[in-house]
Image (tube, rainbow, N blue to C red; front, side):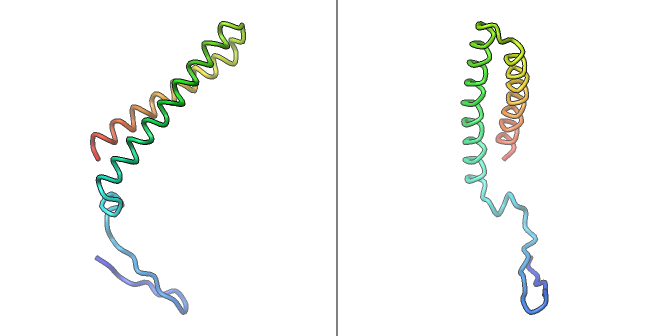
Length: 86
């Protein structure tokens, strides 16, 4: 459903559609899949660097990287869940 909103001397048409429908299911799935792959690549690098830092005795930085990796892993899991429901 569309309706127009008048703002001064111009108008805007607003569509009352679900953003999901506007994007298109295939496009949405492709975007989410890309984000999963992209973030997984970052996760692997973060874990790799955390291990290297632990081995070199820089454990404080490694701890923070491991914490970041945990958050990123949770984000990836949320994206996987979103993909299942897209």
